[in-house]
Figure 1 (cartoon, rainbow, N blue to C red):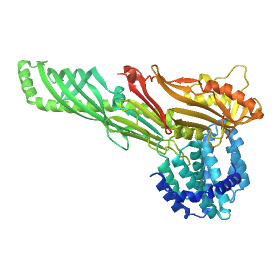
Figure 2: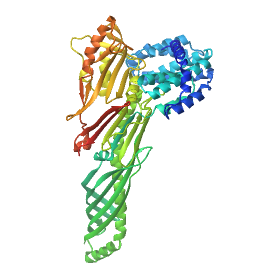
Figure 3: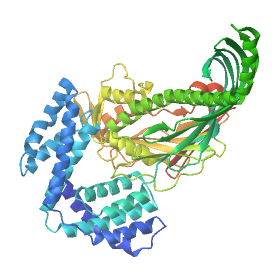
Figure 4: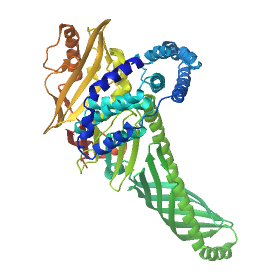
Length: 616
């Protein structure tokens, strides 16, 4: 969207909403959420800050930094990176940045390239420049806009109307409108306190995952029964032998609101039989050592970390025999007397050595786990998510004595998240997931808004996300390939309500081979059903394909019929008539007790709640 079009739409927005803005201040707030919002709106209304050259300079600095990061990224991609440089006119952008006053017309031309919707242009390196370009254009235009302060106040009034409407009836369409308003205010550096209040009140975490202690422990706790070699030196005696360790590793969850904290504890007994060499004698002994060792680990958005292990040990030993290698019985008698005198000290030293070995062993074992977890977290989650702008804006791990909790907020600075707390889940479940529709909608907006994908690219995106191409997305033999340009605001819309859900793809344009077709909304509604075989989602009626803004029962014009027929045929496969929810097969030791059975599947008030329970 160019800045001229942006300000034109803003003017229309103000004209429509200004007529009803007074109602937002006259009416009583509907609940506790609305009052802080209206208070923040009232304060912000009289706090317009003039936009000047300093704002333009800051925007240009941000654009320069984003462009430099993009160039570094493209340099790693060889010929593909060079192709992107040419397509996006990066050299021309750098030329503009070297000027004291860049040409707005030139910047808008370059912005259109970044905002073209080309496959791959949703990566962070591109979107950072695209957003910085738009901010620079908007701030520069704002410095020359007459009576911007009056427009700002009307805009704030209109936002109040939107906020009231959304609080009374949260929905994706109104969330998108509020997001656009927040984005505009933020782009010209206005009303930061109001923006913070909106995010605090209407952008709560939108994904909650709870894992019971029983389930967490199932993959970690284990018995220990092993035989290990013994090599030690105590009071000058070289000891060689074997040790038999019998014990168990247990897990405790430590209550903490800032991190997930785990205590791994080993308790066991080691029985040893040793042969010791000290000067002219050989000493045969046996011993029993009780060991208790604990290692604390904690998990947060940066990964898994730990404290060094701590252990205590108590050794009791018995000397079975002492045999002199020279010197006869006199040497033997002296050795027995000395051994008796040093027995307590030798047991104390042996206890210390055993504790040190236990600490090293726990640290070593945990180190392997930490390296593996952090490597996977970085390589398979953080980096890919950050590259696509999908790493959550908030990610918290917490523990209480009974469960591990994950709180996730998927929302950019201009996106709302959950306006309410999640509903209660099955208290006996071992794994619960509560997801608000805003998480799916926000992620889709970030990943797909404005993109143009042909059929092959659509499958590539699915494979990148799911590591496979689902059967319904595979090509139909003999049919011409198709493509879609997603809506720039709401590419995909998900709604959870009334024990069902509705999925809608908003396409602003479609393609079949080289033919362009008008935009259409493709929707399917499902009802959640439970019977003796488990949970199912059953599609309600046929796939709906209608032009944007048209009701499903209204007549569709002739120009829409061709693409409508194609989309119905395609999406009848994608939106299957019935989706059955299977049990979860867990990996490794977690799967030893069998799969997790689905015990709850419920959709209401924007939330989908899913709960599973271990069979044993």
